[in-house]
Amino acid sequence: MSLEYDKLIFDLSSPGTEGISLPPLDVPNVKADDLIPRDLLRKREPDFPMVSEPEVMRHFVALSLKNHHIDKGFYPLGSCTMKYNPKINEKLARLPAFTEAHPNFPETLVQGTLQILYELSEMLKEIAGMDAVTLQPAAGAHGEFTALLMIRAYHEHNKHTPTKVVLPDSAHGTNPASVAMAGFEVIQIPSNSEGRVDLSKLAEHCNGDLAAFMLTNPNTLGLYEMEIKDIAKLVHNCGSVLYMDGANLNALLGIARPGDLGFDIVHFNTHKTFSTPHGGGGPGAGALGVKAFLEPFLPAPIVAKKPDKKGNMVYNLDYNRPLSIGPVHGFHGNTANLIRAYCYIRHHGGPGLREIAEAAIINANYLRSKLSRRYDLPFAGRSLHEFVLSGNRQKALGVKTLDIAKRILDFGIHAPTIYFPLIVPEALMIEPTESESKVSLDNFVEVMLQIADEAEKNPDLVKGAPYNTPVSRLDEAAAAREPDVCYSC
Amino acid sequence: MIPSDFKYTKEHEWVKIDGNIASIGITDYAAGELGDIVFVEVPKVGTKVQQTKPFGTIEAVKAISDLFSPLSGEVVEVNGEVAAEAAVINKDPYGHGWIIKIKYSNAGELDTLLSAADYEALLKKI
Image 1 (cartoon, rainbow over the protein chains, first blue to last red):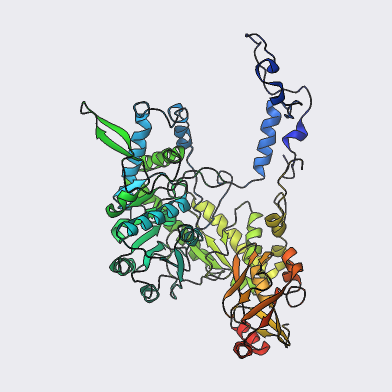
Image 2: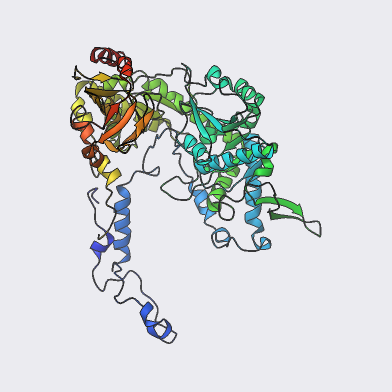
C-alpha cells in the first residue's frame, strides 16, 4: 500500500456491500415509528459507509502506515519517554473482569480490582519513598495540579497563605501552567552554568511567601541535581514544600527514591515510567505520592484494606477524609492504565526496575558520547536517561534544528524533542529509553552522523526534508490557526 | 541588514521614532529565531504601556513569547494587518510587520535604547 493513500472510509462505500452477515431475525419485526415518536426520528437514512471487512481492515492499516509509532520504529522523543508498551500488559488489562466491571459495582464484586489498586499504591510508595498515594489524576500535569491544590490546602490548614511557587528555567511547560491554574504566582529562576539549580537564586525566594519549589530530577537536561539535599533543607527551612516533577523518574527507579532525597510530593507518569500507552488524547494516568504530613489532603476516595466483621481482610473505598481537596477525577482514575502499570511493575520486580533505569541511562550515555563529536553539547558531563544537544554548529551552516528533525523522519525514525528545554538554543533533546537494542542505537547514530555530513556538504538536501513521508513540510502556521478538520463542511 | 535609523532593545524589539510617536516591532533576528509566527496578541488603542513591561504576546509554531515595551506611553494605533496575518512579521519585520504605535511619555527613556551599531554588536555576541 502506498504512503500516498488518503481516502476516507466514505470514499470506499459502494451500496449493497456489507461487512457482516446477520442471522435471520428471530423476533417480530417492529417499525421504529411504532416505538419512537415520529418527530424524534431522523428523516434520512444515516450515511454509513458500506464496505466489506477486508476493505475496512486494509483502509485502517493503510492509514496507520502513515503514522509513526513505537511498534513501527525508534522514537527518541526527549522528555516524553516513548518506551515500548509490552503486549502482555495490554492483554491483561483487557481481561473481562476489568473491562466489564462498572465503577458503581458494590465493593464486594470488585475486590480484585480494588486489590490491584491498593497494591499498586503500596508499590508506588515503596518506589518513591512516600507515605501515601492517590491514583486519581489522569496525567502527569493533572498530578501537578492536584499536588498544588493539596499544597494550598496544607498551608491554609496551617493558617498560612503563601502566594509564590518557584521553578527553574529548565522546567517542563506544564509546571508554570499548573502553578497558575492553582492560583499561585510563578517565579522562574535561572539555572547555573552547569544547567542545575542555582542555590543562591533559590535562596532569594525562600521566605514565608514561598508555597513550594517545583523541581524535575533528573532535570530536563538529563542532569541529576547534585545539591538536592541542600535544596531540600533550604526549602523546608522556610516552611515550604518541595515538589518533584516525576517525569524523569524512570532514571531513578530502584536507584534513588524521591522521598529519601527530601521531596515531599512526586507525581508518576505511568506512561513514561511504567510503559502504559501514551498521549494521542487517550486516557493517561498520573498518580501522586506524598509524605505523611500531606496525606490528609489527598483526593478522596483512597483504596483501603481493612478487616470486615468476620476478621477477613477486604478492600474498600475510604471516603471519610474531612481535609481532602475532594475528587479530581471520576471514580478511581483511569483504572485500565493503572492495571497496565501494575502488571509492568510486577513483571519486572524490584531488581528488574533497577535494570530498566540502568539500561535507559547507559543507552542515553552511549548516544551522547557518539553524537557529541558532531553536535554541540552545551551542558557537558554525564547525563542520566536523556541529554540535550544543540544544533548551533549546523545552524551556522544554514541548517536549523527544525531541518535536522525533519530530515530524521526520512530514515523511519521519529524526531527528538526540539527547541526544549528553552535554555538550550536549537535544542535536540534525545531519550532512547531502555527499550532499544544496540543495533537500533547504532542505526540512529549512523543517521545523525549522515545528517551532520549533509549539513556540511549539501545543506539544501536537509533544508528540503522530509522526502519519504506521506507529506513533506506542512504549513504549520495555517495548521495551528486555520485547522480544517471537517469531513463535509 | 538592520535599519540604521531605528533604536533597539536587547529583547530584540525595534523602535522607530517619528515626532512624539514610536512605532514598535520585533527584529528580523527575533522573527527568525521564533520561526513561523502564527499570532500576535496586542493591546487596545488607549492602553498604557510601561518600559520593559510586557504589552502583548507573540505566538510562533515553536513557542509563545512576551512582547516587551521599549518605551512608556499610550497605544495610539495597532497594526491590523499583523493582527489578521501575523506571518507578515516574518516577511517584512521592519516595514509592514510593525506591531503597535505609541505616543511615548518619557523622552528620557530614548537614551536607554540601543543604537543600530550597539544592536549589531549584541547580535555578534550571540
